[in-house]
Image (cartoon, rainbow, N blue to C red; front, side, top):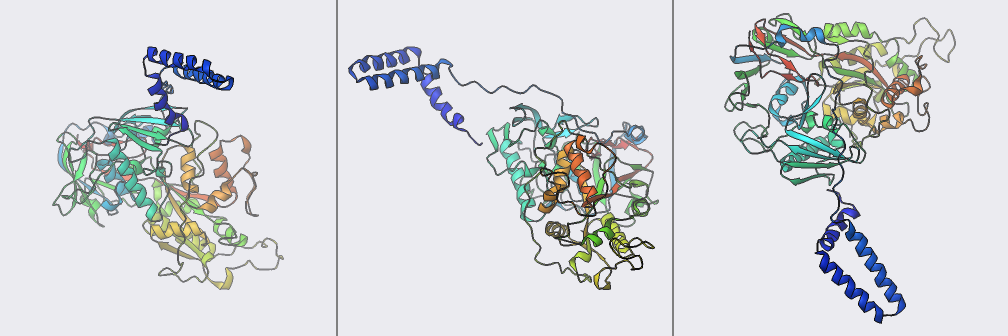
Length: 578
């Protein structure tokens, strides 16, 4: 833990003041008596020393800092406005248990990613295997999970998290504060060694002195700025607790109610304890025909086809897809930026890509935080520079003719393909181009080349976004309702040039492109900072919401017991038959 000068002097004062009062009086009397034989200056110094010692010992031992008043921490729940969804029978209590539940997913689960998921299937599995210190219930209230409680000091700058004495890893070993710090350090190392999306470990680095374990059941956190809602941050999956690799299953040891079964060819989850789940085995299957014979089928969009059993349930949690256009000094020119961002058929694209699971155009939905300002809006940005933009499959001659997206996201690839086709069309057909004569045809891309949509692996995509050399990017942002400031900070933390454009300290029009659109008819200056920055970036054609996709689950008609928490995590431990 980082110590101040007062913290370091406290033990010395305690030793002096811990003597018996009689000993201190005799010490001071001898000092006063001897001072009569000293020169005047030395006698004055001795008297000053006496006063200092009396003042230091008057208060006894140093007082413990006063704790902040306890209060309820509430987030904007993923279930806000979803009352009709909760009335469906699949959310009712299941009276009968099942031996095996089969779940069809559209993506593989890689244990090397644990506990931080990279797709919807990993999110569901890791949520059952790895627990966080806190959780968010369906009403948006932050509750203890691996933690037993917490206390804040100094307005939320210092925190003490008390761990649950009954928290255990799969092998029965206790979850200690040192184990939590080791888990966070391992996740921080993995996310910092390769280009990756920002996560709360940018605030809480397990290898720094801002985190301390004074005893096995206490975790002490010191922040640079006060964060009154820190327990909500601790519910992020990046802060889920794991341990060393389990030799039987090959997975990191977890803290959740389920664990992968060893010796099984398929991915089977089994309860850690007999009462941890209402079933004996949860089997995950993949493949084009897996949904037809499964009890449950999960997909991030309308990929849950008509062949899946039961009724389709559109869940509240969503992924937001953003169009990111770097400024002219990095990527495309002003004219080319207009090609990427003008007259987009977002409603038509949403219907084609995700059907009823989509919302377009997707508005900014940064929920108003408790305060109007965001002291932690600008995160540290890891510097990544791709060695080359010459990926396999590239045909475009110029970097700014590329629209890039991550290869593992089907909706992002579909959006990138439509953006490339849209950018190749004439700008404002039948109308004179900006700054040119009325008879001059619209400008095509330089060299007559068509823009190209290119899907690349996630680490390469993050490094390319950091460089900002492509004309446009399709950025998937998993929605995590950790507050408006942190949601926007996670987006701006992808690239330093994004943070520079978002900086509002030097006026509202600083660094905006010349083609910035007119301001919305509302009081711009009276908005909370997070929403104001988001609207500023949209007005400058830097960040534009394209599509919001909600995951879908299809279940057999006789199943019940489904639960979803306030962050959209699916809980299947109570699933059974009616």
